[in-house]
Length: 65
Image (cartoon, rainbow, N blue to C red; front, side):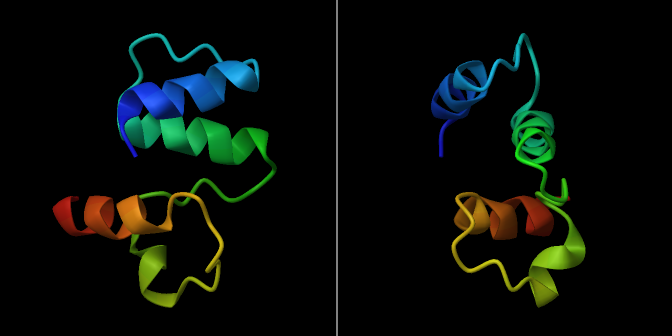
């Protein structure tokens, strides 16, 4: 998902994205939703959240970190 799309989601939740990087922005959305802010971490190796909106991007972010 592109950063502009994520910013739209964040704004809809009342989060002010400013100049947040993608990783920080997704984690802010996760926290707002009451979820673990695990985007881009090694948790993807044993994550059971198959319906997570961020799952595809998460695996890519975890590999680059």
